[in-house]
Image (tube, rainbow, N blue to C red; front, side, top):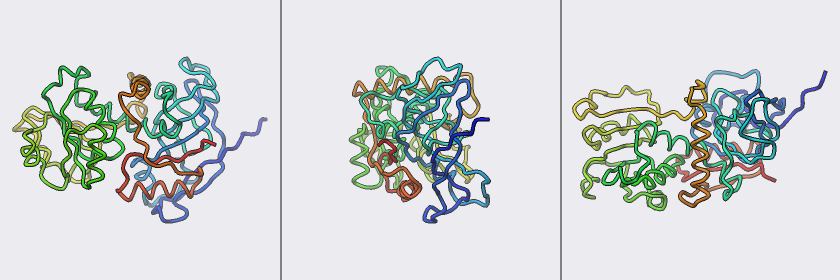
Length: 345
């Protein structure tokens, strides 16, 4: 009988505050073996996202086996499953993975080929690792959920309000919205985040601490045709309902534990929809391969210079201490763009 090979990873047994030394720990686990549609990836870099901190957040549960986080990966294909058709060993890839499988904070990682794509040639592993989850969330939110046209001429004269524009998803949503021909308004709270929003495609930057509609009117814009909420759905709900145009559409990526007054949607016949980037992989939907297609399109857009990567900070080495630092930065609420932990030696 062959002995299973081991690999290093960063995981958790207990769900603890990030300042606790056991919140994320260095572990050694079995190196995974690819299934039929899987790619085994030699991990070069990962980025952190709010999903990592939410999954890791304090709760009364102890894991018997280490739970591995990390759903933003770039790396190299080390092995392929028997039914893989789109990739070969040695290919450079990037992807967000699936929430119901172990994450990528490890030396090697498995991903279904239908949700991976070839890495943009012009981006480093670190820059590429910053992009899959936010790119997929932004693309799906704008074009699949809100139904915004991919033809700029169709969107002429229409506007979108992006709430939380300087974060990871906001930084790419601004660029995609601008590329699609919309007038783009981003919300931010500090001079540096407003500057970041304008650099990444916002025509205007307003405060998300004040009512939106008066600020839009001061700009001569009145209501927004679309709203993409990336921060505190319940906190901004009434402001969004004031600012959305009649028959407009609102999409949020942020869950809420506070009941929303959905009656506010009625008078203007507003559409409200949620976006969850992991839906396609979690339920293995018939269109699961669309995430491969989206990331492939985005890869070409990066290489053609139509959009730019949003990496702002790279941390090393690839271990639990560094990963705790990355989580801590994200939980501070002060990060702009994306933080990446590199394993690229």
